[in-house]
Image (tube, rainbow, N blue to C red; front, side, top):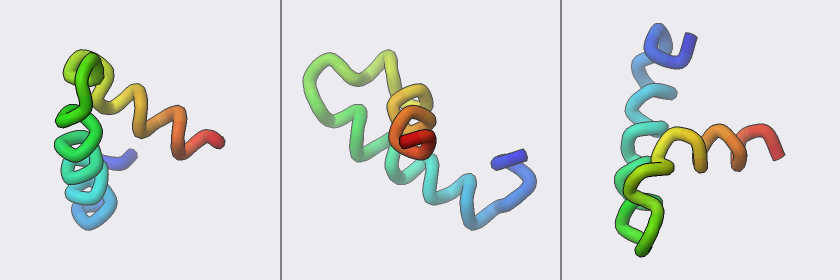
Length: 39
């Protein structure tokens, strides 16, 4: 459903890029965002 909302999808991608700059997070990307959203 996120891909259907262009603005939300772009936000997810921006956040994924931010989070994957941290050491050890490159392989987690969307999963990290999902967990943050669920909290």
